[in-house]
Image 1 (cartoon, rainbow, N blue to C red):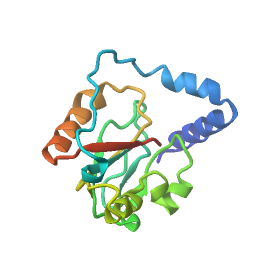
Image 2 (cartoon, rainbow, N blue to C red):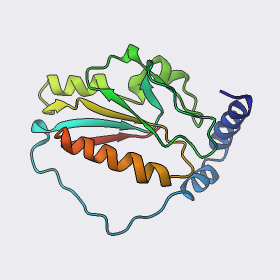
Image 3 (cartoon, helix red, strand yellow):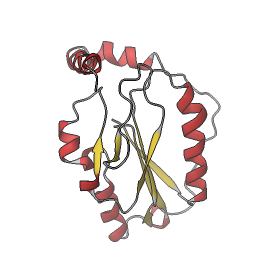
Length: 169
């Protein structure tokens, strides 16, 4: 991580901690309200559903390349995380929150272990074989909306995933 990025990270976290209202206004100015999108209702009981995780906390396998936090627009790519992944195989790369605790306990931002417990207890049907890590620090969302999101939607359809839980970072 470049020195400039480290400084940007520290300033951003300090700003968000001390001026949460202003920080939220700044971060939300980059989003668009999408009207008229179709709503989807789950067609079967949750106990029969295959559930996936999507996290914007910068979660990825330690063997994957880290997210490009030096890119001023943010990294619009995603990382595929198999459902059988153990916590020790995960790490996080993000600059807009303090990742110290998430690196120690990835379940804080990617509760895959807890999702497996729900599946083992019969509360959900199954944990998806395909789960997604994104880096939420994306100021220019055009590329992620055009490339990554449609790919993930199609992947989830092909994997017969019924429900996706979004875990913000």
